[in-house]
Image (cartoon, rainbow, N blue to C red; front, side, top):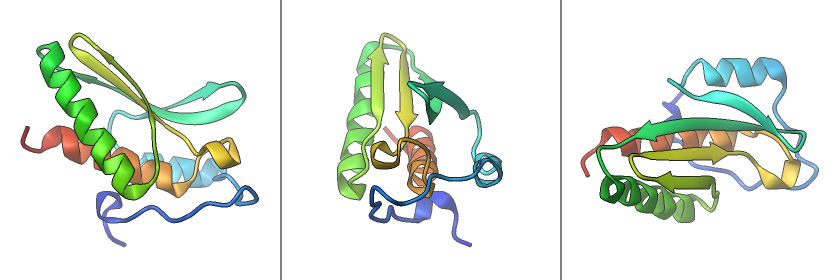
Length: 115
């Protein structure tokens, strides 16, 4: 199987089932530093990224936005001085889908790559 960051998001319909706990565990094991958070009864994938200043944090946010638009899958992003909190989940199914893990891996790839 390709690395998650090399995969592309697939369209999701409202009747698409959310991932099972076992599927979530398997996919989460392929990521580093991400955690499952529950908000409004929905499971979400979240990670905090640290930066030396606000400009770096905003630049990272912009790169995530570009990738999200390309994949047509968009996160919640909180950009603060020195850190960015990224949260992925699939709104249509009110939970987690493989797309969220793909985008989490792409987010890590963006963070690790050149500025």
